[in-house]
Image (tube, rainbow, N blue to C red; front, side, top):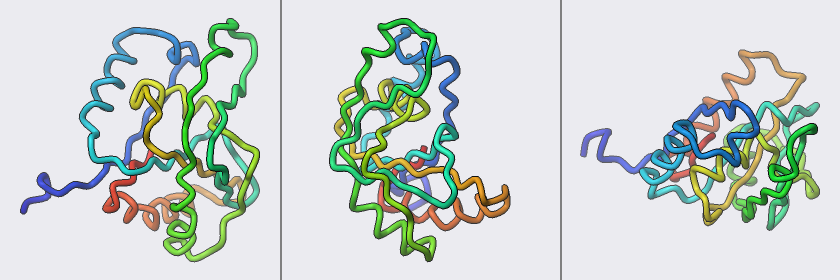
Length: 162
């Protein structure tokens, strides 16, 4: 079996651009749709969004993640968007094991627009469980890079890292 034949979920960096892309139909959103259609074996999604910075590492800890509209000044149509996602709570112990430390759990936070505005196009029906992880503002670039390397084995479990 060569590397291409292995079922390993990718790590994707996707910039959401304008939040209006969440409700747009354009080349960008069409490309996201195509990427999502190709990702057939994803069991869960770990989203790391620059829109959630904390002191320490936090994860969403809820069975159902609400859509968090963390912006202002946009049309009501954008605020009406909902992305119903189940929480991928089973990833929390695995993440703690991989990084070698406990994470803080946020039971109230939902998915911010850095997550749902892209997930809405990648996986429109919201059928894949999602966990969002914060960026730790007390860590520098190198520490975040090392954290990412520790999380990489999740891909072998068909966890898409976004």
